[in-house]
Image (cartoon, rainbow, N blue to C red):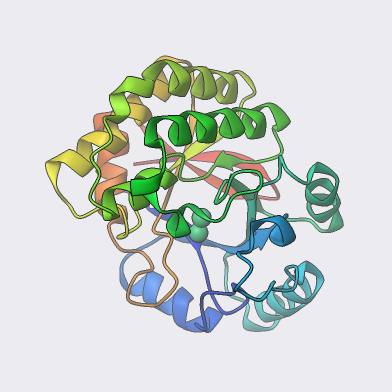
Length: 271
Ligand SMILES: [Zn+2]
Ligand SMILES: [Zn+2]
């Protein structure tokens, strides 16, 4: 069974201090066949920072590229160099400029905050209309799907992580029609989705399993062929974690292959 971890953070992400070599070795120890580093590159920091928090400088994609390319060349290790591009729909010119700046192996597009809103992890759900929040989120995800800059669409269930963490149980099945529109467009464009099996939203329960299975299956039924799996690990302990489960979910959904990426092009590895 070929296993990929294509959602890996390390020290160039603002929320990790892990060395690349430590992430690489930890993933290999867990039997991961191929990894791609996907550091956070948020396109819109000014509008998404609460007033009491300092605005982080924009991601230094040049510094990251130079550092990790040099590390790959000098170490001789085989891994991919990618980005998790956040909110590309809100700053499309900046997103395109970053994408065209280097020969990336893999791009995930994610949405961590909506226009003029803070990260979903910072929202106060008891004060909000959660149904509207989730619908608005899916509309922005649709914009990202239309923009079509990515290899895979990242953790499409992201707000549910934090809605659940604040004690609300949103029935995500209510949004199947919106989800299907997004997945259909991604499939038609020949792009993929990831199973983001982050420990923040997956606790090995049947409920969590079914949640990933539902949309993986839906994507396949809508003609989707490209799937990747990712731990969203920021530390050696988390990298590669639950990738076995994610790969099993892929199989249960009817996929026979996981996609391997280099230079933005997929090949298919048997699972
Ligand atoms: Zn993310
Ligand atoms: Zn991530």
